[in-house]
Length: 481
Image (cartoon, rainbow, N blue to C red; front, side):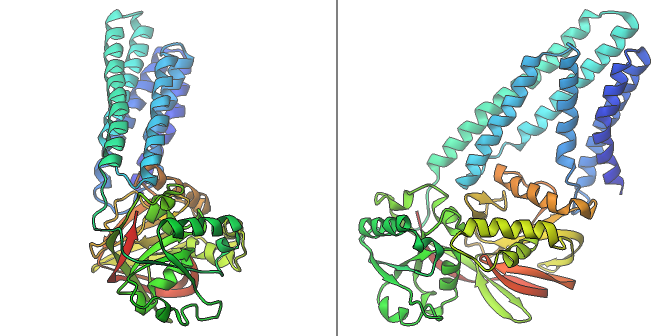
């Protein structure tokens, strides 16, 4: 409760400070300065308390920016601060956001959080100097020495902002061009493409043409999953002696291949029949048509495969979700050839009708967490939903034997839950791991609830359960670009 009040105080501090500034009195300026100092102190206290608790308010990351930008704009409107400098800070944030978005799509991680913290501190100095100047000027008249203090604070802030504008692009390009896949290069090994004709993307002549181009340039034979209910009927004989297989289809096709035991000793690659595939975003990092370029050789690597166990059985998967994400998959069925629209309709139905709040007991390697008002939880060994959208900002190590996850937890009113889920989709895209997201990592994760929660694996809705056990069960060789 204390942390919520502290955060709320920083949010309410902005209109209070603006109100007292507009009084144009000495007392008003003094109150504005005092509230600002208390707001800064509350930020320091909140940062200290954050180390003592599991879950934080999703308002925390907003409160600082809200206060700083709001007051800088106020001083600019009052002709006490430069519009050019305010614009520079805005442009800086936009540029950094774009770079972080691109880095997330490329699975490149940039360590630059320190610049954001230093910038906020320097902007606090600007605001304190401006408020002190306003107070003393109203009391004693113009004081040139205070102009120097404000100028020094502004210069420090601009220097930090400019330094971050150099650091972020440089770190991004360096990481992008120095990134190397680890594993054996597959050059002359025989490849067989197994296409799923029941996949929605296969119905597109354009996608089938890309498949033919891919197989020709990769010198790979194309074969097909049968149209029967058992999609693997006769497949083992068709690929006997072939160790490198490309699954052409959607996420469901690849997940089915992971659960087909004769493929466990083979290397599995992926050909996307749609831009929205999570495995497309992972294997090719969303780079359009890179998989068609024969100069990019496949790299054979190992990737952990997760096993989920619930009251109706077990399943192997690379990613899964519970809560609202499970509801979306449930309400997206039955699927048509318009997969994206199916998903959007499912999301809209979930927004209107789903419960959206779950009380979860999460045990990570024996450490127990009791969480109320959980919106959803996501786990996996690939960091993408599809379309290059990430569900986690963390670096996931593909074969370290660990399960990675994110819990989306709202410490405020349930009324905000579904709106907050939309916001939680955006945060990891820009490389941030902030509330309402709580990162998880462990060898074994157990989820329990008094009421059954919906869940999916690999995008397939599997039903409701009160208990789910998640762990790494084996390693699968995969073919990466």
